[in-house]
View 1: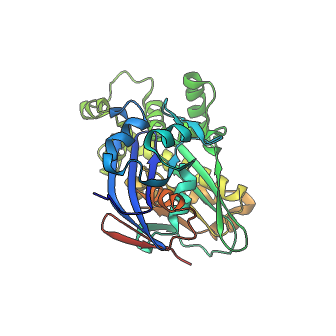
View 2: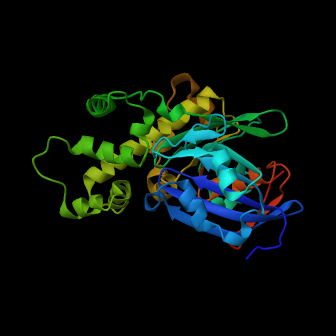
View 3: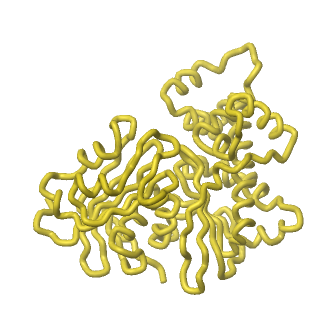
Length: 349
């Protein structure tokens, strides 16, 4: 397939549920994908099996470098996924697939590197704001809740990993206090991830319907058995089919906006707040209803400031793969263009 081509690079986005991989060839300041793949993690024993399934034998030994964005904190180029019991080790990957240099980075950092290649139509604006040169921030609910700060160094934004999604959930109303008490009984410590994630949306729905004698409607029970309760709740809510689902999604969007506002304040994200992850594109209707932005701004004396912060949803589901590809090439700043899935994405600036 790619035999004989030089400077092959492997990139990956390894999440709690899915993994995206891409094999790229570098030609000057451009990267072109020669192969792409998507995998469901539960179908495999570990990431080594996924990589082995993806790579053709002919390219093993011909890959110069690799970079993987991983839904986990990374220490010493080794990590254990937070929501999946996989241990990922760069040395092991390098030896098994004969790759000279393997880098592991947090998936939100990888997403942040990839954002610079997206087109305007790959964002949905929730608040136009009035941007000022400075820091940005990224929040992303999916299997878990990721957060990242993009520090402005005077010339460019430098992503910095964070595990802010595991900070304590702070209720803002009587209803949210009752939600916290409900979740304390289930988990003990309650982080924002227990609320703002796929499982978090299910947790909110279960809280709202707890104590009822009547079971959930049959169509919901069947949907929950599929293993993706969050998608079922979101779909039923946005179609107007179930009031409990609608209330759960409304509460989810409100809490999501509040934590996004917390993050924007903590890093003074005057240049913008970005919403990534797999959930946001699926619940755009709920995010655009106004509840997200109301909660985002609702910070007392800093309401006016947050009203000036641009807020955008990332629509492209392989943004982290873009960032990992750029990193695999040595530095995202050196790559001006990435071609994948029949699309050409050019770096701005």
